[in-house]
Amino acid sequence: MRGAVRAGRAGQLLERRHDRRGAAALYHDRGLLPEPPRDSSGYRRYDADHAVLLVKIRTLARAGVPLARVKELLAAGPAEFAAAIAEIDRRLRTQAEEIRRTRQRIAHLSDGDRLFVTPDVAEYLRQLRDAGVGDRSIRLERDLWILLQSVAPDQAAAWAGEKLAAFGDPEFRALYLDYDAAFDWSPDDPRLPAIAARTRRWYLNRPPETALPPDPAAAHLAAAAADAASPAWARIALLARQDHS
Image (cartoon, rainbow, N blue to C red; front, side, top):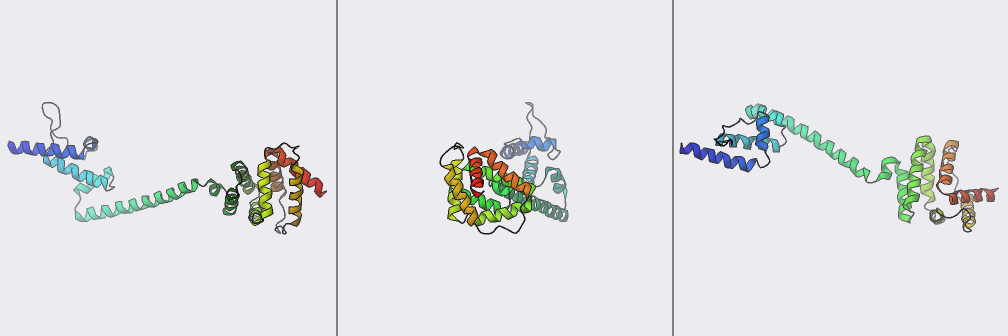
């Protein structure tokens, strides 16, 4: 009798230690842990065998064994157990690789530019940001490149290379920063003609463009997007064309 009491107390102590979050109830529901008898107060009376089984179940579960397979492994012989563990290990390795790839994709989400545009365009946008161009202008650029890549991918790729090369020119960078500053200016601002004249000169003196024939749809989309974004930019473009004529 006293031995049974000691076993019951040992089982209770072990169950409390390993079941602080109600795992034993879950294991009962899954048929992994037999229901122990209850005392007069309705409490379960675990013995040492229950506690040992609970430790085994928890050990396997913590090692990544699905609960659906725990019962099978507890009853398996050494060879079957080793084969099952090897299979579970392969599954866990596959899951780990999937998690690694998911983390890479999540990391790319933090760099929205590279998620939606080509590497050349992403690098161009990075250079704009490093030069001090405002977030609004960069966002407009990025959205335009997304559209261009959809409408005319070959033209967009050619233009991206030209823009990257152009941004190495200090005059082009200065012009871009002036455009960025002029975004909210009035179309009648007296500073706009000077920017238009500098823009025209830069385009007249720039290196030859790519041999790829310009895509009319892409060119129209780029011009329309710029004009719609800022009346001041539309005015600069108009003045530059008038000077050219």
